[in-house]
Image 1 (cartoon, rainbow, N blue to C red):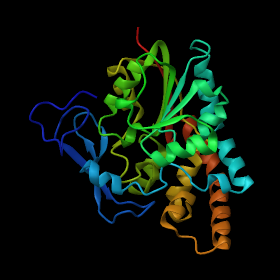
Image 2: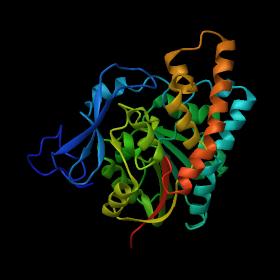
Image 3: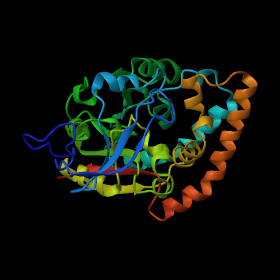
Image 4: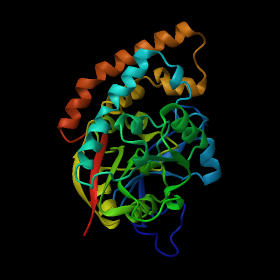
Length: 325
């Protein structure tokens, strides 16, 4: 996304085209974690049609909307075996997609997962320890990646990452760009860190999905107020092209994200991460019953989410891109 034109009000201007004119789609607040009762607008730029949150919270306030444990599950190591098995199964979509991308980079290339959380994805890649690295805003998440999943991880922003240029054959960003004030800066930094034949894999919620059309402000993919930009696929195409990337592949279904996203849209009170953050479970029995109900809802959501993905309207989009020559 190009920088805002000189003189454009930072608070109201579109981060993509700089236009200050928009139409309001609806207002929304934090349905999942209830960190605030403040209402935000979801607006669409009249010029380029980018959807975004308005107003954007300033950085200090934005931190308040990320409760402790948001980036990772501190209870994962003690979770029951069934829940852990489901997490590992559900993330295999990501693993297979990335393994396919690794075929097109030199052997023994290094991999960096930006926004690595507790490191489960990198662990499931089963790469030698010296090839996989994680990066996360949260020091606690980076610590869990090291201690629970054996993944070397650093705490910080990609734009200030402690790595040399052209260090990595592949960089992944799962559900990162929508949280950023300047996603272009992250893509520029990724291009700098990739080797010439390197690959970038990104995933974001897709504001062009059926779920957004059906549920509007209640759609879990908005994640108000933590998601600053709500991308459609064409927005990503423009963004990647401007950053010097060309798209190789895309995937619109994720077993980890699409069915669970629909379940959390329909019943946010059952979402396990939301309940953990809100400390909503009064007893182990209540937790077990809500977990079971949520899991059944996720299973019931699979056929619909498969159908919308098959119609190129999945609630997430995963893209592999390569550096332009």
